Image 1 (cartoon, helix red, strand yellow):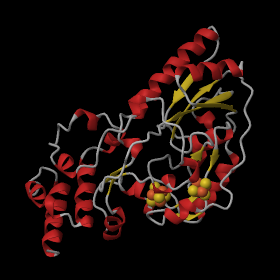
Image 2 (image 1 turned 180 degrees about the vertical axis):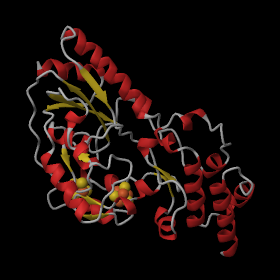
Image 3 (image 1 turned 120 degrees about the vertical axis):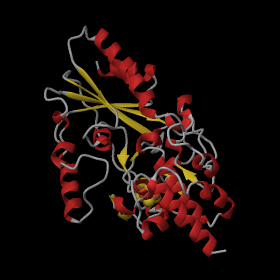
Image 4 (image 1 turned 90 degrees about the vertical axis):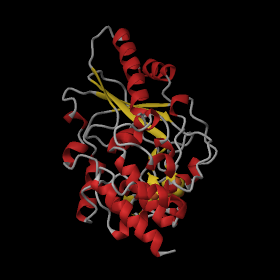
Length: 333
Ligand code: SF4
Ligand code: SF4
């Protein structure tokens, strides 16, 4: 039965698949409690109730198994723009592709099991520690950078899962393979990896670029030239070198960190490829804010005329950041 399910997942296009039980993630519960005690809680953008995060049955009470799925998104494309956007966010919103693939898989599972079981699909939007589930299902190990790492595909993987009341033999977790390596910690841009496996979200650039509102002086300077996300702890990882290209052309990174394009977004009508990208979930204003801060951090005088166009923008945050940026750039002249 297990092999048939895996065959179906592979035929639909998933790169990784494994099965686990829906028991409480006891080790992760202990880890999160310790993290809270150490002061690195709450973690932004996830459920704050730790007990919910570690209990898959909170999502489906009658669950018997979890099918953990991985979709690889590595492309050998240059990403050396001065204004950085993480590769995962430069293509279409992966939720769209993965939801479509999961729906196809559920149709096949229903046909195959003659509608005897229930299948509930989740990608990234529910209170569940997806990486912990994937680790338990044997998709990879949790690296010191807190990413899930697979020996073949590295850590550039989108995770999703199908929870079912069908009983399926679970797979076994694999042993961590980081060894003595510390490259992710040494290369961390925000000094956010406080120790192996412990991430301080408040200094992580991936979080700061998504944090709304006004940033502190320290946060602005940490941002450096990052418009969205940060890949340093992944791109420095030995397991992300020489990995295969993704088969999912729809995920190909196409957006570029181009301040001219971003600062010219009109409020309600940014180009479609930006609206359909994974980075659109926090709105376009945050991209403009980060771009303005990055321009100041780069002391990039060529964008002064564009910034001047924004001083009567209808967003108070953009107006204020534009005025601040003009002052900073002219001060250093
Ligand atoms: S995303 Fe960047 S800042 Fe965050 S842990 Fe990784 S390297 Fe550090
Ligand atoms: S860089 Fe090294 S320590 Fe960090 S996750 Fe990769 S293998 Fe593990």
